[in-house]
Image (tube, rainbow, N blue to C red; front, side):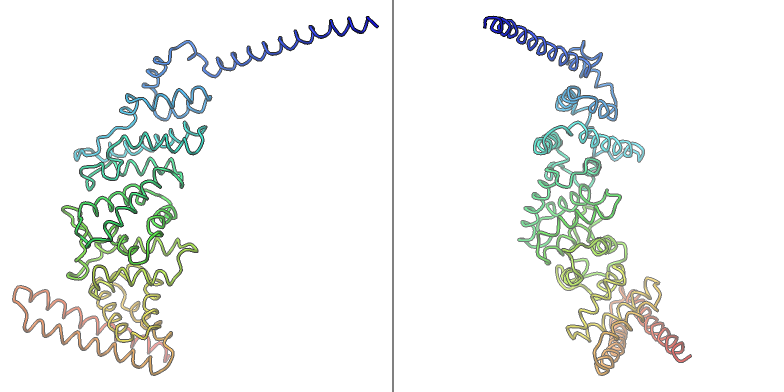
Length: 439
């Protein structure tokens, strides 16, 4: 009876001893693991380690941050230091004498920074990761919406965009914050008369284009961010934002030229960016955008701030492409606006003549519109309205030449010349088309 008791009493201390040995072994392994993750840097004080990082390239620091969790933490601490921020974030954004080579190098540097931040914050929880990146970036004045004194000539917005492109988090806190800021400032702009706050409009234009839109290689990314900017707003405000970001602007101070489309003849260059933005949305449309939405957007756009000159509308539709142009014309046909359609066809022909586009395109567009008209009477009325519009416009142009100011005589005569040629070439294409059908 006593023997088992003695055996059990002798076994318990032995088990306790083994357990203690096992804990001691774990401690030793942990210490060895801690040392191995730092390697030769273990013997260096933290201050010396950070001095060494000051001589390592940004790409090299990014590679080091992935070696171990301990080194990653030290890299994060280094980046957060003011001395490192000055080195990692060069802010010479307003130097007009910088060569293209230097600017490309700076852009590449900020791309490497984006990769560094992506790697060194990978182990952080998402919320902490986003807060940390935002805290670093908000210390750079040119990266703030209202921080730059000269946004029109600021190279910093392009660097910020390059940084975010490499970092590329579609739910990035900084971007969402900036979109929220854009929304607030846009509302201020929408509630006021267009052009009343020139500086605010300029900041919106340069920030959206430089940071969120212009730097993407993949067009679908640009379409995504453009949709993020536009989607929260009703169609009228979407049109205003599009014009604000991509419409014609002054070459001197960058202010948006709101009156340009209703007072002057706009050339291709002043309309191309606006048309490209609409095509970007159309070609990369999602379920949120239907064809009817684009028609409403075009209608609203061509009425900002008032109804555009029809020649400008025609040139804009040509630049937008066949599908958007036809959808716009079809909406006019569906609402019975045959006279307005006829005048638009005449201006499409005029723009084709002035800008040296093929006149057969205008004739084919007229054919497509005829095909969607329901009855022969509607088609005949539409064709008759086109001829009446041609005749009326030529008579008006002739009257302007006769009674006009001598200083504008040459421009008015040139417009009459283009109109007569447009009518002749338009009818020539119809004759060619008719002869081919008869054959």
